[in-house]
Image (tube, rainbow over all chains, first blue to last red; front, side, top):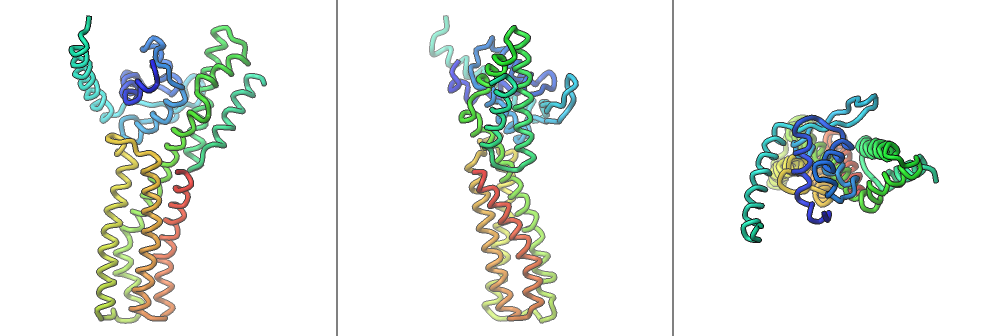
Length: 106
Length: 212
């Protein structure tokens, strides 16, 4: 998948992968890759500014913690992030249903 | 170049490309280092030798040219937020300063149309500055929910803070000249209460400008 196509959806995807448990940056990227079947072809380094942006927006909380014996910055979904994720999911369902109808899904 | 050197060289290039608050910059580069260490270890587990694993990890991360703008935007917004916070903090205190030590330096509060106009200008300007500084604080914080506050927001914040510093010191100096004349105490108080804080704001704004 081209990075351009992903732009605008990356934030929602990040929020979705930290929904169940707090994760550090590399684990978030691994989860994105695993859930997408490796189809998200973006430079992994571009995820970190997005994490900081989501934290500033109040959608993620972060803290330095020890994971596997090493200090890591770990991100978790905030209350506002949970609500934003639910909203994004609803918007995506509506959008994909409409586009699917117009394109004529098989 | 061995694997460790590839990662070390990449991190050095990345750090060299970034300008901004040192703590945030250190955190960002540390996160990148953690990522590259994990990615290298994953490739080694998958059968790559150490050198090849590190090179692939670096390639996956993206070139410094691709990655640095996003990191730099983070630094710019962080610096802008600090500048907006500083400006807001000083501006909130200013009304108490103007009504306190600046006016009670011994001389009675002067009358006259010019002084009254300057006094009104101080109040109006101060109110606008407080409102805009608060808005910029929101824009560089949770404003990210509605739009991407990147370097442009940082540039606006730095520019506004710089102009505010100059305007406030200018009005303060004019008011003091009209109200107190050459009285050294009044000028000393002006320097301490207005000049020094606004100089700190201007320095912070200049640092933010450097990140944009």
